[in-house]
Image (cartoon, rainbow, N blue to C red):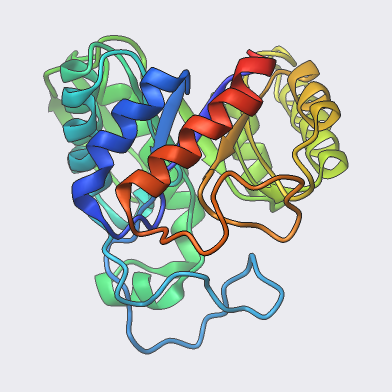
Length: 298
């Protein structure tokens, strides 16, 4: 089982490199960072992944550019994989996105992983001037364009959103950058199945296993090998040895924020009353997670 440290919504930006270095030393496979290009201060859109439609982070939470952030983390680490979970690629143009991702991959010696999703916040698309209704098609075409650009060769493209002839983008990545896709809608699962993997939402073991089976079926339906993709799960039930075993048996990888309490905790990795803004509190939680979970399931 591969384990990922989630750095989403860590407001203490000066801690990110040291947290990543500590995660690497403790046996985590990789780190993930999340993305918002701009944060509307007035909005009607409900957050789709909570029961009440409210998000769990303060509106003032900083969202540093994910690829700049991963480049900095990459310079401070040696082994861990560097992933976005997720990158709102459709808010950008494919040239800017492809070059940023490729640059991180080159400077980290092939450790970049591009996790993308169409997103849910309509007001963010409105602010940038990108139509929300076509974001899925735009992102699909962006994937195709980025894969062309990453060859480092002379390429052309004639599509619905992007049209260009005879361009070259270098540096090309060290190897084809894996593209994993988030979301639970049928279109999102089909996108994940035809690319390199799926980034899961918080789900129970049963729901994750059901989704894994659906993804394999969608790959076969699209003429691809059933087992040719990665799946990064997020667990919304107690983290027991049996839960880890079942997810591992289907080839899953598991993401975690060890210092963040959840409603389904079997055990806590922080002390009662701990100040989660402190670097040492986060590092201690990472160490405990590594000792109790990673060491027993790697």
